[in-house]
Image (cartoon, rainbow, N blue to C red):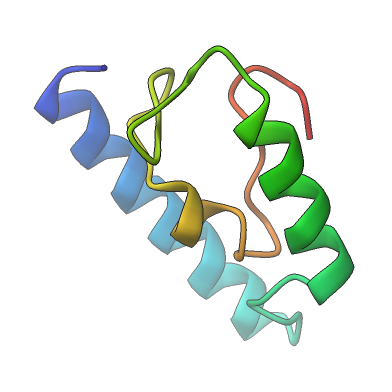
Length: 76
């Protein structure tokens, strides 16, 4: 897992990007099919450990739902 400092930076970056996206009129939540596909990819990924991504430290149940999020390993 990344350091706590790195994970905190990741969370703030995600929040900032989500807020900016919402202010531009974009949705915050990905559609159900996108969420399902993201979760399937993560479940088969070697970086997925204890419901979290060991690359960024995020919990999949939150990260996969946000429209503007991306996989740190470039898988989605």
